[in-house]
Structure formats: C-alpha cells, structure tokens
Image (tube, rainbow, N blue to C red; front, top):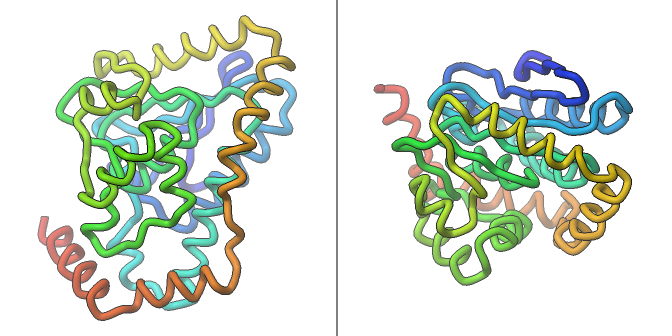
Length: 253
C-alpha cells in the first residue's frame, strides 16, 4: 500500500497515514484504508490498532488540489471510497485508538472520529469539520459521527460555522479524549490499547458492536440519489469558484 505504513508490535498494529508531509486524502488512500482494516480484522494475531499520522499533521483532509482536477467519475469514486472507508473503520471489531499527531481538519477529523479513543498532541493544532466554508456539503452520516462525540447542538453549530477547534477546545467538547505532550502521543495510544487488552476480548468487542449499531444505522448506501446530490453541489458554479480560489491559495504557498 503506497499511502500507509503498517508495523506490528506484539498484538498491536500501528497504521500510519503516509502520503506527503500533510497526509492529504485521495481515493488511493481511502481504498488502502479499506483493504488494511479488512485485513487486520481477519488477522487473529492482531488484537488492536493505532491509527496515526506524521509530525505536525494527522491529515490535512481531502486533497483539494488533486480533487479539483478530477472528472465527474473520479469525484464520485472518491466519495464512494470515503463512505466505504468510514463504514469499514466504524465496523472494525477490535480496539482502534487514534494517535492524532497534529492538524486534523475536515477529512482528517472524519478519520479520527472513526476511532474508539482519540489522543491528540498538545500544541497549536486544530481539528474539526470545516467543509461548509470551502463549498462542500456536509453528508448526514458524517454529521451523526460528529454528533455522537460532541452532541447534536454543538455539532450543528460547529459544522455550519466551519469551526476548527484548538486542542483544549477539542478536549473540553469531547471531540478528543486526551491530550499529551507532542512526543508522547504514540506511547499514550499504546498504553490505552494495553488497558483494553486487559479486558476479556470477546466481551469488549461484543460490547463495542452493540454500541456501534445505532451509529451505523445512520449510514446510507452510496446510491444514485446520493450520487446526484454530490454531483449537483460539486459541479455548481459557486462550489467550483470557492474550490478554485482555495487551490490557488494552496499552490502559492
């Protein structure tokens, strides 16, 4: 897999997002995540997983520069892959701890939301769902992911204003569960996994499955009406203008 690095320590797998310095998400990464988590779910030697990023960035979210050049088929393939990756990670039966190493806006935050426990590096980092200001319509299913962590009222407010939270704000609002010094995030994630490993594995996984049922009930199939909705907004003049301006800003840096 070109966009992920997977290492194994005893009964733990560490999945590192590995695409450039900021881990921007594209279709290939999403497909790699599906393959990786399906493989780890079947691997009896792996009892839990840590999802981590790189120094300063967990993931910068969707690769807007690449996406802007996509044709209609490629755009739909990306969003279908995104929905598939979310469902695969949410359905992952074993403990999944997020080691959030830095900035995690938009799609990066979505990946973090799929984890059972989130630990974030202290520092001037931001996390949240800021799709609306950049012209991307928030899917209902992702709203429910956010709502599950921070409550319906704050989820709606934060999404509609495109709020990116500081580490302390994320902790106060329940978006992350713990913050630690920047160099200790991975070790803290390993410690959390060991705590989960101390419980009866069958009981833990069955309980997780029971609690995930309600959240997964909000999942919608990537069907023709949803494809039409995504295409309508993605190719609208307003959205293309906002995304075009953003791409121009990013390519000037």
